[in-house]
Amino acid sequence: SSDSTKGRAREATCKSTAEIEAEEVEKIQSYRFKAQELNPRILE
Image (cartoon, rainbow, N blue to C red; front, side, top):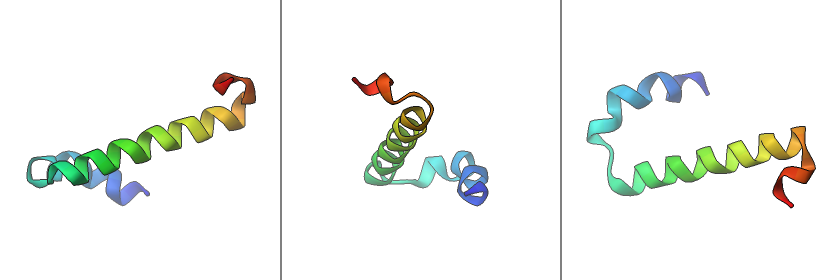
């Protein structure tokens, strides 16, 4: 969502390590999902 993207930089300094790690996991999963949609062979 655009709201979380806009707030990410501003709130980064007050996020816990767990929250930061969770966001990194979401970004990785989102990237892999999008890449798989574009080219399924990318994950082979």
